[in-house]
Image (cartoon, rainbow, N blue to C red; front, side):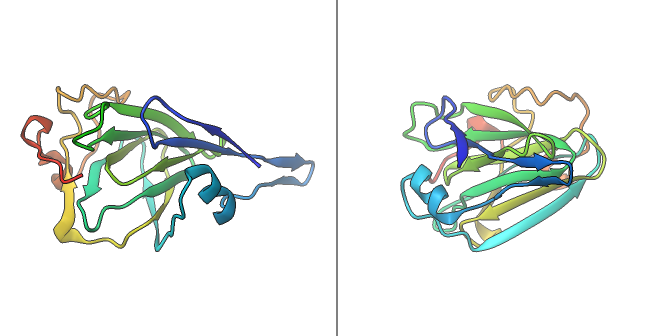
Length: 182
């Protein structure tokens, strides 16, 4: 069984698996569809797995895909650690524009469920951080969007002042000019 934490924003979940450790090492079930669907309360179908490797200080995000290609993501780290961020972009949500930050690491083995309607990003806290995520929809570049990672309106504390970012992320949309399709 797993331990579930429900942050202050509806729909997000922090999942900690039960880990069995002994002198040989460790074992845990990283994903069980039936248990996951029971916790989420609906049937979730993952269609794509992605993996990235980042050096310390690399920031990726804040990314999302608009309907009809919105993506739910179940994210985790298998090497290193990150600060993971989910921003609520559901226009009718009482927490619209709010975010949750979670530290995910190979050591804590926590996973973060981010349903459709959230922008997502993370910053690597260690070199060679390996980040995995399961997606509920296929990558569709024509529906992809990026919010500006350091937008003062969002006021996200990434825990870093000069991250390494891509050109795409440097050109993210300001939240004040963003019109949500969710």
